[in-house]
Each structure stands twice: as structure tokens, then as C-alpha cells.
Length: 235
Image 1 (cartoon, rainbow, N blue to C red):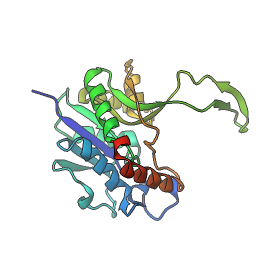
Image 2 (image 1 turned 120 degrees about the vertical axis):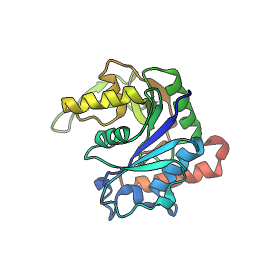
Image 3 (image 1 turned 60 degrees about the horizontal axis):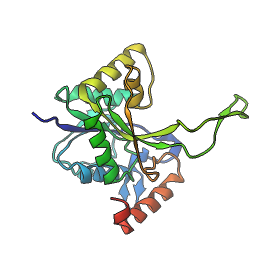
């Protein structure tokens, strides 16, 4: 039997750095919530996938009308991202070798081409895969006083993006062990790396922006508009 594809989208965060009146995933972007754009992008690449949406129990902003997937379920988000993802993994009836892609809800600009490339790499690499981007800027090591101590070599440095994809059993074990150790992780690849695995870095586009700060909204709108107007460059 072929493996199934599950999409996990943690969306229980409050996005306090946005200093807004609602969680950032519900801020308006070109007339629709960020969450709606993100789910639409995922659906364009994987219309038959099963979606697991991690939401806060007290979420009063969410509307099911923004979910384009036929097969989806809502699960309770956790205090941290890794808790939300673990809750999602615990709630689904997945096979050990089913593929799981985890994507930031605040990355609405990811392209279909990048999504498909990540999915293919996840199928091919037993240690999983993640979209990533080589560091282009000069990297500085800072002191506690905020001064530059020295320059870090950037040749082997990459920015971790999402989605990140793994087989169900592998990701469940990785997060379960991280939680048992009390280790706080900011992405799934870190948990898998702690098992001694080396996930594949899949070069992603630089316009896969994570909306984090207030001025990111205007940038995301510009990216989405450019992608819409130049579809041959943004599939």
C-alpha cells in the first residue's frame, strides 16, 4: 500500500511581535486572512492530502470556510510549536511510513514548485527533508553587549524554511524523545537531527517569507501580487 500524505499546520500561536488585535494568522493579506492564503497554497500542490490544523481551544477567529481540503481535522495546539505538532501526530491514524509535511501558517508565499520538490525529496531521503536557503549575508557573532565579536563563515550555513517533511514514525519518535528530555526545539528537523539523522536540504525560493513583524505584511502582499502577475515564475 502506498504511503499517505499528511499536512500539519501549527496555527495556535499568538504572534505577539505583530502587536495586533488578533493572532497574526488572521491578519488581512490582500483581503483574506494569512491562514487562508497558506492553506490555499498547500491545497494547490496537494489537493488529496489530509490536513491537520493545530488551533488554540479559545480561538474565536477561525472559520472552516478558509479550509479548501475535503479531508481535514482540527486538533488542540500546544504551548510551543513542537507541542502542537506532537498533538497532531498523536491525533491521526497514520501508518509508520506515511509522509508528514509540517508548514508554518505564516508562510503564505510558498510556491507549488517548492512544495512538490520538498515532497519528492521527503519520499527519496530516509532522514527526511526541509526547504532551506543558503545564507547570502555576512554573519556576525554578537556579544552580550550587542557588539560584533567576529565574523562567522557562511559557506555551510542555510536558513531553515518550511515545509519540513518526514516519515510519520520517525517524526513521532523524534518529538517524543525531545519532549522527554525537556528540549525546546523551533523546528522538526532539529528533533530528527538529535536522533543522529541528517535531513536533506532542498533549495527553496527566497520569497518564501515568514510573516513575523508588522512590515512583513506589505512585503507578503507585494510577493503574492508579483506571483499572481507572473505565474510562470511562481508556480
